[in-house]
Every structure is written in C-alpha cells, then in structure tokens.
Image (cartoon, rainbow, N blue to C red; front, side, top):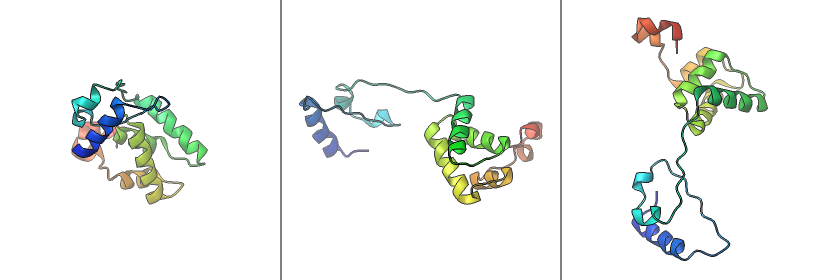
Length: 129
C-alpha cells in the first residue's frame, strides 16, 4: 500500500500521463485506494478459480518441476489456497521446502499445519484433510 503522499504523487502522474505509458495496478484491498485514484482507473475485478481448475494448474506446475504429490496432498493444498492461484503456489513452495521434492501426503499435511477433520468432526472423517 502507498502512503497518502505517495497516492498524491501518483494522482499527479495519472492526471497527466505520458502518451506511451500504461499503468496496471493490482490489489487485494481496493477499498483502501482513494476514490481520486479509482475514479481515474478502469477497474477489472477478477474472481477466484474453481478447485478443479486450480488442481489442474498445480498439477501442471508440479509436472514442469518433475515433482509428484498424491491426490490427498494436492487436494489439501488446493483447499487451503481457497481458490487463489497465488496462494496455492505459495503453499506449494512452502510444502516443497519443508518436505522436499517427493513429499508424502502426511508431510504435506504437516507442512500446511492441518489437523485431520475426523478428529474434530467424526462425520467428516471420510474427507480426511
């Protein structure tokens, strides 16, 4: 996030931009951006991806890195990412740092700090993590 002074300097640039310059801003907290900035921008709100799409993407990334993880471990990473591609890749980095390039399902669960759902809700025991 920018300070008030930085937003004011940005506003000056946005009001008189060079013809050859395009600005692209990205934030997960648009409510913190002053209305004076927002009113001069074209806004695109991106939605989160489905768990299935995210799982396919993570599988593709893992294949490119020559790393394999089991389906339960992949499911745990995708669920913990809550449909965020950025968060899924960050979690995947953490898992691979913690558990190495051939992580077991248990190592992934430990790296993510998860608790077996069956320990809390016996009805959910079938879904494990």
